[in-house]
Length: 279
Image 1: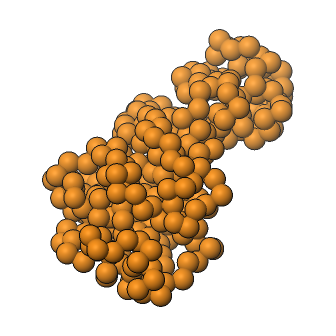
Image 2: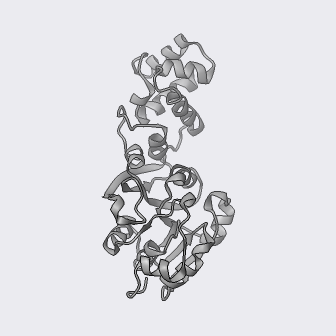
Image 3: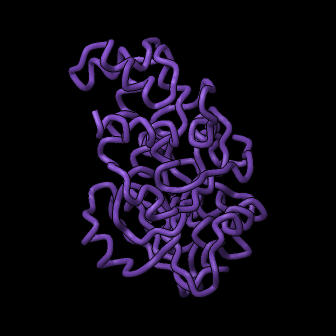
């Protein structure tokens, strides 16, 4: 944004009013914004896709290192703010559309080609948006997202930990995730009620090449359907088989028949799927 105006100045100058329902909390620290852009791995000839333009502060930081920035925003009342905050930025375009309601074809018409997704996500759309891109066939190279700290912990959790979940495995199926930095709630305007973290997910297409992916997804969903139940119990319910048959399948996969689903790694689920296909 222009050197003369801070986010607060721009908000005041345009009379913008925050929409709590959209989870609007804007980042203001230029060093942090530059660090998030750096974490994305963007090159000067690459395209950045941002979801949640907000006041345009991250948009500007991305435009400084990327060849092209396409930023999606659902709140059209931010147009006057962005007109002011992105003045002079020639390689960034703001699209007032909801990417969660767009088809892949509609998205590709706008973006066309490989891209890296970078976003300071409203907390209420974090998981749906991450899954929307990881489970699509769109040519996304990586996702670098600011999320609630407890969500970040789930995205990078180890098998057997309290934070390990079906979402953790969904991310592992499509790539590898790591937390690149922790962000205090004080870094936002207005400040939210929780701290955040930046998570970088490097997408690895073909990671499950040759595997029965729908079966693995079903196994994962069933394993976490009832966390207090054993894996055998959950598989029995999900696949309509007896508990003893489920236990036999688990044993054939080299696992304890009384194990709980949250203790299985992605490799364990792959092995389990192989046994299922033979049974």
